[in-house]
Length: 219
Image (cartoon, rainbow, N blue to C red; front, side, top):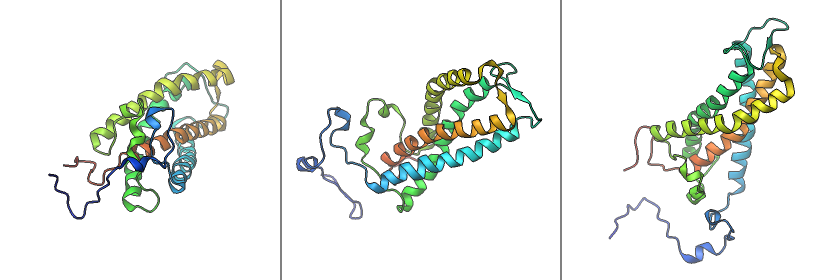
């Protein structure tokens, strides 16, 4: 016998519950409850577009602060370790998803708890063979593990692709820091965040547990 609190909602899944949802040729995508328009709006507008704008402004400003502001000062593709495109892009490929996951875990959880902009999605969307390897939830250890994994994936996948494209575009000479590199870095980080942040939000929304906190797991 299972005792359930009167205030706790209970959902019983019946066989007929699955009939209204189309089956997929991919096993992991079968019988998943589709996203609502409001949920799509949240992922596209609140996460993708909003983070595009935020990361452009933030990284443009940080790049302007970090590097010399002398006229005609160039940042080369490789050379001085602390002032070259290779180091800057490689480090950013890891740091951006790492920090975005930490910030996103807090912000998306706040949106979920308010319940106005986003509601939890079907957790069965997490059953994809690759996605299920990513730590879920907002417990601080899970958040840090997820940040490291996403940072490493970005380092391995986005890093080489970005470095090759940049080298093809500017060669070994690099580009002028003021204002060419500042604008480039802003747009590059904006597009990168536009891909990363909706995925982070997806993980948080699909694995949301109202009993879980950042410093304690649900009993």
